[in-house]
Image (tube, rainbow, N blue to C red; front, side):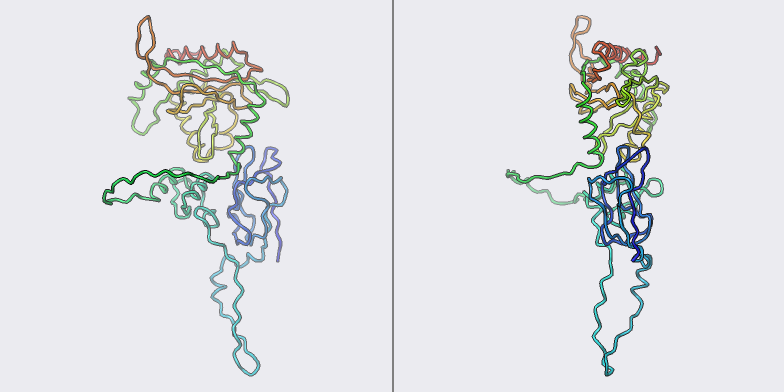
Length: 426
């Protein structure tokens, strides 16, 4: 037996440890070189770890949720057991001589020792599924739905399975029976539910939990809510969208909001800043790198629209769509998920009336977009119907005074209520 020890690799940028998110092999499995063994996560990104050699897995370090330091033992292989791994059929077909006892009688044939074989993989996991290219989110969705990823046709680069591929597979996984005779609706029965479910907090969810806890514990939040009359903005949005070719990106409120924010922050640079806790220094940014909070299968991520101040309205719409889809599909790069100077978060149709967004440290502010609804208001002494939307904002009260935060939001409101001013610099 030749013992090969594979240690946790250095994943860059000063990383000293990584969290095990999922194993795709187990002790006893024969695996091939470059086959994905595990998914690990640092504070920056999720990484798939391939096998460095061909062989049999002898031991694994830790389970999902455990932290392993860089340089510590991760997987131990028996590389000699992997010599025949590439051609198991040839070895199995080779005839073996029949032993003969003294006197010429044929001896009883001993049962051959069981050859180590990979155990049947669960749907969406194991050796077969780990060879396909798919994001951790897609692998998890496959496991939950009982789908074998090896049977899913990937449409991404090099056959990678995309979010759209998984949606198509899930929609066809349990087709509804057609032509079944209509049955009478059964009487509703009510029953008590018992039991609990334990879900280990690992991966992206753990990172989100830690960051939200740190932000709320260390940053004194100042909340400010203002209503905005977006009637004129909605009229302009619908007019511009009416000329959009089929299949092109249409305009939501976000491109207008980020464009207006980029103009306003020129006068309020204290809101477009970071606080460097190690150097005890406030860093004000001239560029506006807008974070767009995006819900994904792995939890909330914040992809970044860089240099919003230099982009046109349509360019902003395209970039928001691109980075958001990259985050949802698990294809966003580390650079696309870091470096925002202020964040915009929206719950879309679920936006509610008021929210209390948590600042995305080390930033100084976050703008929450609530639902836009038509309601009666008094305008010029008369009751009329207008489209109203609330902005719920939070600021770091250590460095952004309440007056400055309110003044910035009021300037933003003025631009949104008179949308022509969004396109006027200064």
